[in-house]
Image (cartoon, rainbow, N blue to C red; front, side):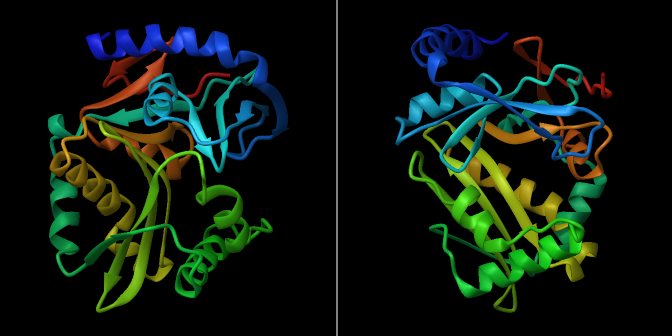
Amino acid sequence: MTRYDQQCAVEFAELQRRFDDYFVEMAVECPYHQPHTAVFYQALFSPVPERIMELFLASGYRRNGNCLYAMRCNDCISCVPIRLHPQEMRLNRNQRRVMQKNQDVEIELGPVQLSPENLALCQMFLSNRYPHQNNQAESYYSGFFLTSIVSCLEIRYRLAGRLAGCAIVDMGENWMNAVYFYFDPAEAKRSLGTFNILTLAELCRQQQMHYLYLGYYIHSVAAMNYKSRFTPHYLYLDGRWQQGRVVKDKH
């Protein structure tokens, strides 16, 4: 464990004693289609200082709207928090090809917007990727992306001015948290998901942010396991961040 992670663990232990009474467990059907009940350990928050959010992320927690949560499933430990250290990253041959393939992509940063073009693209993505679920772009923005507890922004990817992808991220002084990414399914050959993570890592390097949180790694879910192709990566296992250990699902 690094000195940074040791300090975060010490500070979070004190924070946890203060906030633990506000957290509740909520059991729902697994959102990642694992054959077990998912248990979210969660609490709603008003605005929190940037350092508080950093401590939660460094302790394996995630954000959904104004809710901070961790998974406490009784029969499954498939969801493993994953992060990158952008200054250490080494691109493989495929990732270099993705960067070359997307040289024509225009990148812009701005506030999270409930705009018509964002909603149209997000709805197209949800309808294509999750056709059997009643997912609506408006509810994703109002209930998931938009938040008043931490600074967040959008990174928009355009092709000749047309919106082709959009990332929602939280940002602090020393970290970035990837909340969600959606894109035009017709541009799947561009590997925009990979391009997005490479772009986030480059933005972190430019801003001297040392930690990029990518959410969960799940070995059996293709949309989640590709994150381990970025090296070196770190997984939050047994209460600490461990480098480069790819784990299979355990039930």
